[in-house]
Amino acid sequence: MTGVEREATRARGAAPGFKVAILGAAGGIGQPLSLLMKMSPLVSTLHLYDVFNTPGVVADLSHTNTSAVVRGFLGNDQLGPALDGMDLVIIPAGVPRKPGMTRDDLFNINAGIVRTLIEGVAKHCPRAIINIISNPVNSTVPIAAEVLKKAGVYDPKRLFGVTTLDVVRANTFVADVIGVDPKMVDVPVLGGHAGITILPILSQATPKFTFTDKEVAYLTNRIQNGGTEVVEAKKGAGSATLSMAYAAAKFAESCLRALQGESGIVECAYVDCEVTELPFFATKVRIGRSGIEEIYPLGPLNAHEREGLEKLKPELHESIQKGVKFVQNPPAPKS
Ligand SMILES: NC(=O)c1ccc[n+]([C@@H]2O[C@H](COP(=O)([O-])OP(=O)(O)OC[C@H]3O[C@@H](n4cnc5c(N)ncnc54)[C@H](O)[C@@H]3O)[C@@H](O)[C@H]2O)c1
Ligand SMILES: O=C(O)C[C@H](O)C(=O)O
Image (cartoon, rainbow, N blue to C red; front, side, top):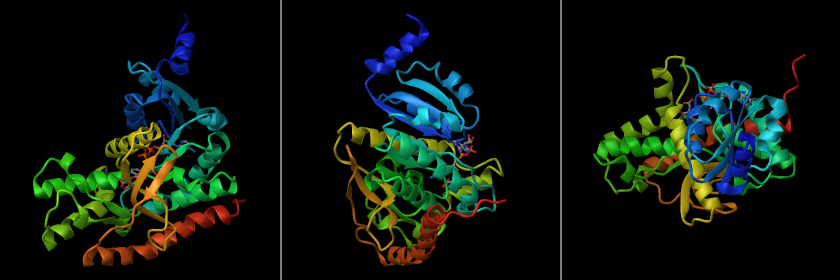
């Protein structure tokens, strides 16, 4: 049997599992995320797409003796084959922040990248579950929704903005304060994914703990500025990549377990919902075989959290509108 035949046999069904594409797979998040997905027993086929260096990443990753078959796709001409038949598409493509920048400063470059990639998803795998990582998430998810609507294939149950890193950070920082293993902690983080739109709900944290006002102020500030903490520590060399790959793999794994039929999978994610008057909001969702099966209300908030909620709404509204307008009234091309 030739190598190609052997690969075809494995891809055909020797390893049962899902087909997953990572768009932006050669980047700082994309590479460790590709490794983590290659290690997942739930993945049978892993497609790595980027505009740069995918052959190198695939050559490297394909030597790992896990059962997923990995294939590389380079440049826009190969976007279609990269997406054909995928069950889950994870998108970390786009530029990261440098010190002094906000996530919204990435809009001008990343909005167009996400639009093009989602046009590909609409055409080649419109039923796939989509996990968007590219910033500004508060705007790129509405962009994706508008592109899918334009193509007539929008299913809000299948589109997720990945905010898992906010939950991962919240769990870690809270565990440090209360002195337990971070694995035991679960803190819902609602709202969006930028500065004050990141709303940790410490009053709903498990295990139950009574935080002092000083601890609430410290934790809220650290969780809201966790991304900036990493951007500043990296001094111009990018933003969070390893913790993001960990968070993205955790979220993707939840989506795949749900697709496989496992029940009771609940995650926070930035989704199309009506838990507030805003059209998108990060909240707890239950994921099942067809995507989101239940959207949970925000739950009881204390006075401090209610104040944070009201404060974040204008900024989140503006970011959502900016994304929607980018697709509905695209800026004129520069001559
Ligand atoms: N949601 C979150 O919590 C979260 C966390 C961390 C980073 N991010 C965001 O993720 C994005 C990626 O960050 P990174 O550190 O991996 O950046 P990076 O620059 O290291 O990697 C980005 C990759 O995207 C690729 N790319 C660029 N244009 C593309 C296109 N049109 N099609 C396919 N691939 C393309 C690049 O070639 C590169 O390999 C940034 O926007 C960053 O802000 C989000
Ligand atoms: O902070 C960033 O720019 C990247 C990401 O959104 C993060 O939260 O780490």
